[in-house]
Length: 533
Image 1 (cartoon, rainbow, N blue to C red):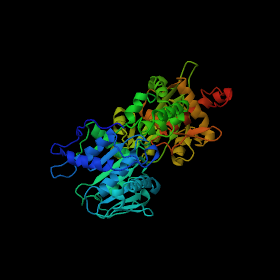
Image 2 (image 1 turned 90 degrees about the horizontal axis):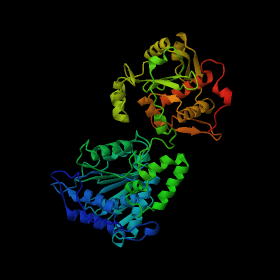
Image 3 (image 1 turned 60 degrees about the vertical axis):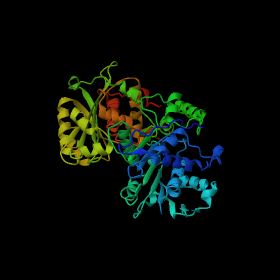
Image 4 (image 1 turned 90 degrees about the vertical axis):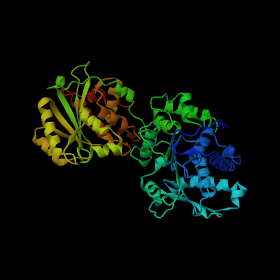
């Protein structure tokens, strides 16, 4: 066991706070009187690993001048199999049974009752293995409640399915695997004012990195990162994040060690090695490895576009050089409050030429600041740089976009505009009235599969030129691919956690550009058949 050899209080200690060694020792000793409950460790004393002990000493030993704890919220983000559940259960028992709080209310929260029960069962087993606690604690397995009789305190399991509970008087809250919370309702109910009547409530949030960057977990993750990097200050918030940076080599054992503080103790390096080899051989497993083993926030479950290959196609695109050239448009209207994308694809004029991509994006002007704060996406910067247009009001003004496309038609030879047949009928009619040939484009496997595979092929061959347009790049990095049993693929808007409208528009325009080309009467598909990958 790797023990804490020397301890220095956290750098987030407030100026008027002090480290109380006796209080910290008490918390550590309480936990180390408990036992492990599972596997080869079952029945052995719960000896805190150095990183665990540091957290406990910081949380329970750093006190304000009035003698109460400085930190009320702890955010612990760490890969799986590092001993999260055991630490959470130990903290729950410490708050319920060892904190000297009369009628303490401690809640175990998770996305569903089954997930919340994991920590509860560990805590219940810890009690059964500790004679001193066993005779003072009543375990109600049916209602998932633990009652500490001397102070009439309790630990109760709650799930997101039963969030509509008010009237809490919280002394402690343990939220396990916060990244799978379906929404923020449970978190808000538990943390907004519920602990005001207590002098030192503790909200103990523990999780692995997730995939949904619109979640409450990602919001708290961002706050933790801001505090860790000195961009924000909050004396009551205690952040701990173990993980690998995006730029680091995910196959490097040294990176694994940095991200997994319990490597070699709770999880063997051979297990991580096996998972890494599997991810190497099957790219579909790479993101799962990054998320669960290296604690990286990944955008989708399966990484489709290798971004280094996409970035290698950032060849210059000069709009003035493309004037008068044949091109094809793809229009994805999305919703009126969302991003609307229109992409022009110019087919090559000879074998040495590339497919040039000119994307255009629009967003309602009134909600751009709100979206920046909510989505953590730099829409405002992109707008200032000219990569993203805005339309007046709080919805996308389709009339403005129609006029814009009409002007583009005066500059470029737009042969066809492909659109989602479920999209805005009125706008299609208006574009037809302007003289454009508008082609409906299905969003199923039949229509989307050939150009989606072609997009990947052209990217790998460096036959695409997109000029590094940042909005399109962001969307390309967001894309999640859905496949059917026959091996056909298409972008999956539901699974992609961020916007992919520009990619869908690009795929539709690319399909028309490949099929029709420069009007030679023959498409690539006719010549060599549909690409099978």
